[in-house]
Image (cartoon, rainbow, N blue to C red; front, side, top):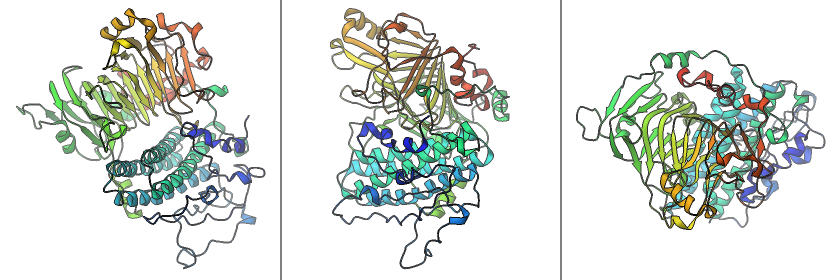
Length: 612
C-alpha cells in the first residue's frame, strides 16, 4: 500500500493536465513526511499571515515555499508550541488561516473537522482576492467574468464546507466526503477560470493561493475518505484508492427509504403551484424565469412549476436559495426551453452558457458576517425536472454550448431531453439521477465531476454542423474527477448509445472516418462505467479515446459489464480500460453510489444487479 506521505508528494498529478508545478501539501508539509503520519504527534509552527492581494505590482510570483501550510496536524499536548502573537499585535496582523484549536488528544473526527474548518477560513482570502480582481478589471470582460464566476464558486465552496462539517458531526461520512470533494472542485474551478485570463501578477498570485487552498481541501476530503474506509483508528489510515488500485467500496445493504422519499412518493403526481404559458392565457407567468423567481425560498416542501407546451426562448437560473423546486412540462419536444449562449462570446465561459442552470448563488462579500447570513439562508437542494426539453442552439462556429448544468445535490431528471452539440449536459457536481432521458450531442456531450447515475437513457451522436461528411472523432463522455478522494463518476445502466438517423447515414456511407468513443479523460481520475448497455455499430472497437498522449491513462477508471450490440466487442478495447468483476457491481448501485434510497422517489429506484 502506498504510504500517506508518498501520496502527498504526488499531488501534482491532480492538475497534471494543466502542467502545474507541485506545491507543498498544505495539510502535511513534505519535509515532515519522514517522521509524521496522520496519527502521530508532530509540532509545526503556526502558519504565517497570508496578505490580501492588491493591485500593486510585484516583481515576481510568490515562491513555492512562501505558500503557507494552511493546516498542520495538532502537536502533542507535551510539545505544544507557544501561542502565536496576539491577533491585535502590530507585529503580526491577523491570519484568516490560523489553525483551528484542537482539544487534547483529538479524535479522527476532530482532525477531519479541523481540516474542513481551515479550508473554510481560507476561502475568505480567496474571495477578497476575487473582489480585488473584479474591481481592477472593468475594461476586460473576460477577466471580469472570471472574477464573478470565482465569487460564485467560492460561495458554493463555503456552503458545501459548511454542509460537510454538519455531515461529519452527524456521522454521515458519505455526505461529508462528497461535500468536501465538491468544495475542492469549486476551488479548482476558480483557479481554472483565472488560468484563461492570467495576464497580470494579481491573477497569478491569486492562482497560487487557490492551488494551495484546493490542496488543503483535498487533504480534508482524503481524511474523511480514510475515516469512512478505516474507521477512527488512524494508524490504519492510508491515501484514497480507486478501482484501478484494486479497491471497490463494500456493497452496503439497502436501508429503508427516508421520510423525505416517502413523502415525495405520496405526491408524485405533483399538483402545480404555478403555471407558465407563452401567451399568458390562464397562467400566472409568461416566462419560466419569472416563475422561478417567484418560488418560495427555503421551502421545506416541493414547489411545482408547470410549463405548458411551447418554445420558451430564455436563459433560466435556479438559485441555491430555492430548494425542492420541480419543473414539469407536456413532454419532450413539446415544452422546450432554448438558448444559444456559447463560449465563443466575449465575457462568457462554458459555465455561463447553460440554457438552464442550477444552482446559482449570491456573489460573496467575503465577510464573516456575510458567511453566517449565507449559511443561515441556504436550506437545501433537491431540483427535479420532468417531461420537457432543454436545448442550446449555438451555431456551427460555436464551441462549448451547454443546454443544462446542475450543481444541485439530490437532483432527479425524468423523461427530459437535452439537445446540443459540444458539452450538452454539464453534470457539474454532487449527486444526480437521470432516468428515461434523451441526450444528444457531438463532443463530450455528457461531462462534469458529479456522482451521476443514468438509467435507461438514450445517448444520441449527432452529425457535426460543418462539413459532416468529412468525418470526425466524437466522445460521449468526459468525466472530470481531479482527486481520488472525490466519490464521483458517471454510471450508465441499461442505456443505449447510437447515432441519430442523419449520423447513421453518414456513418454507413464511410464508417472509417466517423468515429465514436464512449469517453475520454478530462481530468486525471476520470471515472465512467457502462453496465448492461446497448452499444450500436457506431462505437469504435477501442471503446475509449485518450485526451492527450498518456495523460490519465494510468489513473482513470473506465469499466464495462454486460454490454451488448455491435459496439460492445470487448476484444478490441484499449488496454487501459477494464472489465468490471461481477462481484463488484454493487459499488455502482443507486443505493451505494449516490445513496439514492434516501432521496429518490421509490417509483424511480432500481437495483443494477437485478434490473428491478
